[in-house]
Length: 349
Image 1 (cartoon, rainbow, N blue to C red):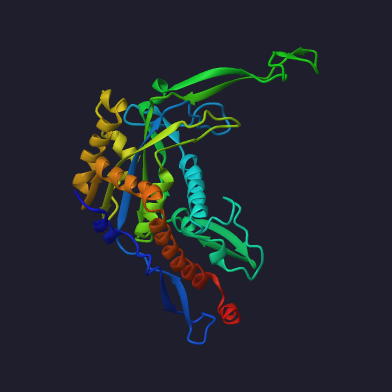
Image 2 (cartoon, rainbow, N blue to C red):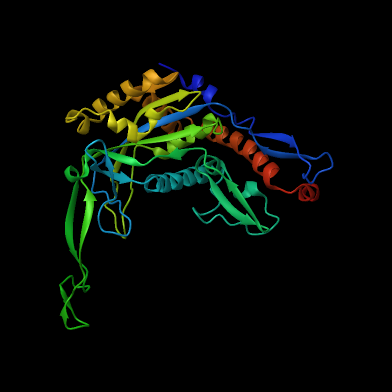
């Protein structure tokens, strides 16, 4: 079993986020400019099992649950696209940074500098490095690619076995079917489809190229938490997903087996126990992934590490805040050095 310290060989370094490079078009006397650290070999994948604990709605414009065909028999499985999970977890990251006074100054998806002279470090933070972001300042698009990529979350069971529906009436405030305005029965009848409680979905969160430092991975684990409210339309059922960490895997090269689409292909023909027991499913997934990676942590080990981070809020809040403030200082230097034009740096100094 590997340790988190060993995974640093496939992660970035918070103290070494950028490089200086020579370029003919650089607007500096020495023709040098700053850019993010060049990528190196390294891939780290966090496998999670999303357990539905209350009705969970994932849909597009149609009323049906989003799905995709899998396997030789082309069976339909529930497919929850990445943003169904990334959006609330990115939001949780902003809340965490606000609590620690280390960022989160902008609303999610509304990053907009207030002036041409505002420093990027005032609106970009650790969340930016982990989840990515972009904004427009002085006619320039300041884009930061996400350090972590979310895969689709796929149900272990075929869709027909884990989806239900209810009929709804949208009429008058009284709740009756009679439309007072039109003096007739309402035609606003619709079905709401939902993923049934007890359904297990497999998802993989991965980072490649050694662009995300260890504190970024820790921040991601805190953003995942243990449960949350996901999906929904105009109404949702409250806390409806419990997140289980199934394992963490690292190698110099990416492995095809870390795709949930590949993992589900390996399931037995009759995977009854795997579809009902998170522990058994996690052990099975670990058995598939650990032999093809140099480093691995099983569900017990990575969950224990996550709980250590969560416990620091109560037992070592100041120590956690100090770590985040150190990272903020490094990220401020990185974002300002990367995005502020040379002539504006001179004026600022």
